[in-house]
Image 1 (cartoon, rainbow, N blue to C red):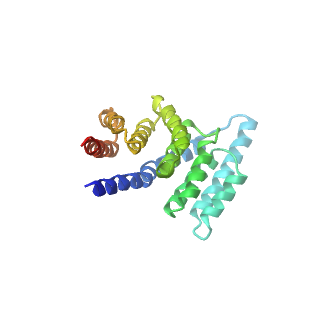
Image 2 (cartoon, helix red, strand yellow; image 1 turned 90 degrees about the vertical axis):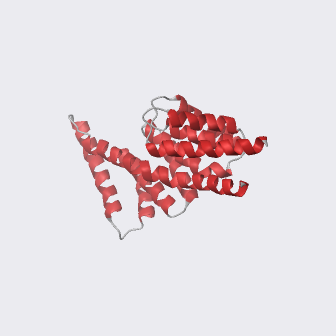
Image 3 (cartoon, rainbow, N blue to C red; image 1 turned 135 degrees about the vertical axis):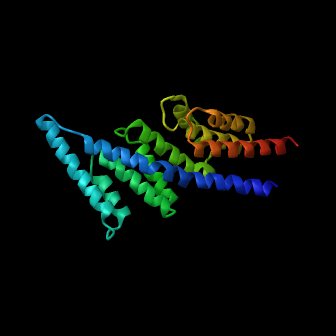
Length: 221
């Protein structure tokens, strides 16, 4: 029974990384591209800035639409040499490509860079933090857990954050890894009953709540 539960737990953890990206990564990229495209300029300075942004966006789209280039290398170079909102798009695209290639270390570094990008909107930074945590969750040291919990608490306490309840499930997983199943169950339960939750997130919360309840029962026996 314990082996089966462990396999289910591991499958949930691994599946969440890709699913989080698949479910929300494209929406983030689409939203950011829309912001860049819709930016208008009225003064001469704004016009020059817009022209520069358009050139940068065109260059990025050229990379993404060219199947004959090494996209990861081209995106990495673009990020180093470009400025503005299109860099955030490039960081998301690069991290997504690295995840698909199974290069979790590189994806972790790319998401971390986006999380530390002070020019990025908060919802992109929070998403990048969550992705970084997902990737490293199984290999964290005690010191890293303390730091990660602080990041999660910041997101959870922000009632306007798009990623508040995703962060709550991450915190539940950390609590469960520390055998604090009651706290893990409480977090999963809050997500399950929160208003306006996507069904996929509710289903994940229900599955984790059931799993942690079984583990709590086993630990008490």
